[in-house]
Image (cartoon, rainbow, N blue to C red):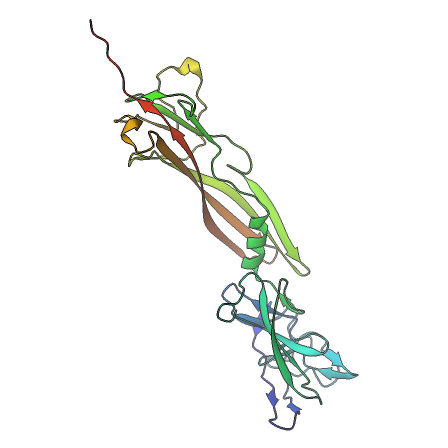
Length: 291
């Protein structure tokens, strides 16, 4: 794949005529997540028909575009991608504009008509403009329905623990709470497959202490008694929860997900996502009875 900039066309002021030097044809415009856009040539050196092949570095690519029986450049750096009647160029959102779709400028009337430009928003890419690999990755991630931990804790939230006794912590495993989960997002000509896996859970115990677990944890069973969890637990609270304003400790568990994605063209990427869940726990003081 070759990425190149097309030669700009110049619009003659007042005359409405378009002066078109040799232009290298491209197959589509690629825009990254930051709005940087490039013309992408999938088959370099396969010049167009007629007199529109031209181009730099030994010829353009693609077969050119048509308008009212004539061949016109498919891509012009100043105006964008030809959609059959006008050129469309992706642009960053205007101040205060929506950021959940695509903003573009449509330039019409460049061939013998009255040139005009309009800016518009659309939920999908305008004609000839593909979403970036990063954007497709975000679409795949949105389909995963990832969650924070499905919290398991002992003592149970409807019971009470005692100061100094071990606390068992675990995340009830499912694809949405631990993974792996894979989803694919695609548009014609491009697809991205993304896979999410939980890397760790950080348990904020609500008393200024935290526990990091790289495993989901072992569910507590009554037969375990006062033993400590083998893989995910807290040694115990030092003060009763009555010292808290609401009489309970708030426990917050945060899963760090690693999402990796790849495309058929060898493009890859990754990102981390943190998702949290909360519960509360009651801790009583150990009462000592003397006679």
